[in-house]
Image (tube, one colour):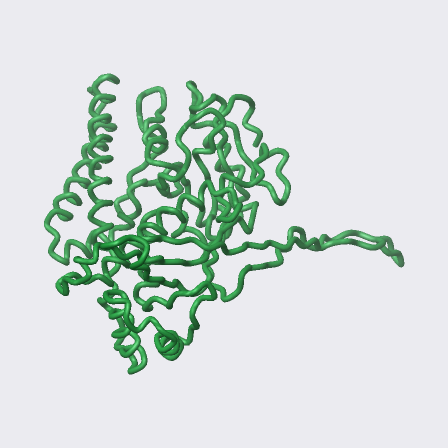
Length: 417
């Protein structure tokens, strides 16, 4: 659940189950506070009570996530602006093309240009209706944290480029009447992100297309959206950049003391595949301070659900959970060391040398680049009795500010901060 407003909105919409979950979550938070403040309980009793509450937190989060997905599922025919005459004509022709394949001629492409000022893709196919294209973008934002946290731009070319100033001018003192010589400052670096094609191909039984009660346009939009979302969000974390987006963990990673522009600095956890057995949070604090102070406003922790479960159990010698705090007005992940926690299960699981925890200002660190337009090709020839719908779009992604994100490497050794 993204925030309290979302919960309230679903409650106002009449979702009784969401209200019950919200009430239970508040009760769990109060119970957690009561356990921590009770001095008569033994450490074992506290651990048992807190473990039970943590289990309920995880269960509630999963249920709320499923409800949110259903609530945010895009509706290709709902909430749109009134069509222009050209759009209405194209919509009717496009729906006919989906169901029957008729009208898939130059006339459909011409109508698409009139309706959306966008030509047919060079690889063939016809531009999908605007609601279907927006639905794909919207679901990407709800199925993975990185797509929502990163900065997003839409372009009409094959590549996005930007100049970044990696160092500015520095003042210097000179003697009276003297000069300080020439300077090579400031320094610039060019960042390039290329967009690559991706496709999703739902197959539909022909009998289904003959059933007018089925809103096929909505169903296909959902299928394409989920397919693009799952693939894109995985790439934004671990993609190698070869014909795809380059993820935040897949750039050149170096120990933070050796950080230079073009690489991502990391702090060692102190233990292979795990946090340190003694004072595990010390290295997490080092990771937070590895990020320059100017990037900390707006910075968040990024990790998967299993790693967060480990972090939530970090405690002091008395058994008090002093680093993680529940935050009913924010995401389920709550706050850790005062910063919000975002959960993205595309982050690597804890393992030897894994980069399972990141801290950064991802709006400044990472750029998602979309090529305008999603196209659709209808194929009822390949397989008898079924029709294939080839959705195709182009996008990419990569780090644009290497200073704005830091990683934790789950390896032995000094922190390296």
